[in-house]
Length: 410
Ligand code: PMT
Image (cartoon, rainbow, N blue to C red):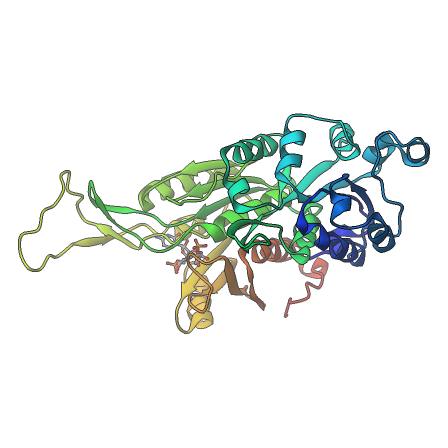
C-alpha cells in the first residue's frame, strides 16, 4: 500500500531526538516507494545524525539554515515550502510540537511549516513522561485542530529505559501511513456510514450485557474511508477511543439506539459498513431500580434485538453493504453463511483469538464476496482498514474495470 507515494515530493524534517538515527532508513523507504525526498534538519538534529548521511541517502543537499545566503539562493524556504507535497517531521520532539503549534518561524523547518500549503504530518518521539505531560497533550490537540496529521507515537521500551508511549513509529509504518494520505479520492463524493464498538443492553441502572469490542476496527475503517475522500458518519457504541476528527460521530448505547441512528442515515448512504458487535439479545425488561440479590440463582429473560444490517439490506435502495463476522471456529464458513443470510455484498470473516479480533490492535481477516475470497494476514487494524477500503473500491467497479489487488483472488 505504498504506491500512492510515487513521484510525491516529501520534505522530511528531522528534529533533535535519539530517534533521528531512524530518519536515514525512513528516507530510503520513502524513496523505495517512489517519493522524491529532501531533508530539512534542525541544529539539534545534527547532534544525532550528520547532514552528510541524510544527503547521501536522499540524493539531495540538506537544508538546515534559514539565513544561509547560498542555500537561500539555491532553494529558499519559500521555494521549499512550495516544492513539498507533504512535510513529514520524523522524529518530532516535544519542543518542535510546542513551537510549531504556536506558529514560531525562527528556524528553517518551522518557517517552512508555516509558509507551506502542503499538509504537515509529524511522527512524535520523546520520553513517555514528556508525551503524557499536559502541555504536550495540549499542543497535540492544537496541532490536530490545525489539521496537522499525527502519526503514532508507539508504545514500548525507550532509549532512556522507560517503557510507555513516545516511541517514534517504525519507518515501514510511517511510510504506509504517509502513502495512505495521498490515497484520497478513491471514495470521493461517497457517503460512508460505519457502526463500531459494542452495544450496552441495560439490565438495571448499574448493569448491562455487552461484549469485548473496543471499536478499534470500526474507527480504523472510518479513518481510512475519510482518507479516501469519503464523507463519513461513524455510529459508535460506548468505547474508550479518542473522538476522530473530520467526520460526523454519533454516539449510541444500545442496539435499538444504533438501529435508529443507522436508519436515519440511509437515504443518501452509498456504503454501509457494519463493524459493530451488536448484542443479539437484550433484557426483556430493564429494571428502573438497582436489582438486589435474593435467591441463589437468577434468570434473565432476553429478547432478540433487531438485526440492523438486515434492516439495511432490505431497503429498496440499499447501499453497498459490508458486514463483519467475528468467530472463534469455522470462521470463513460461518461468515459465508452470514453474508448470504443477511444479503450483504461483502463480509469480513474476523478470526477471534491468537492476537486478533476483539480488543486487539492487530487483525487477520478473510474478505468474502459472491465471487472472491481474499485473505489479509495479521497486521495493524489501520492497515487492514486501508486494504479493505481498496477492496471495496474495487468491488464497486464494473466487473471489467476491476484491477488486481495483490491479494485479490477471483
Ligand atoms: O471493536 P474491535 O475490538 O476492534 O473488534 C472488532 C470486531 C471483532 C468487533 C469486528 O471486526 C467484528 O467482527 N464485528 C462483527 C461482530 C460480530 O460477531 O457480528 P455478528 O456475527 O453478531 O453479526 C454479523 C453482522 O451483523 C455484523 O456486521 C454486525 O454488525 C451485524 N449485526 C449483528 C447483530 C445485530 N443485531 N445487528 C447487526 O447489524
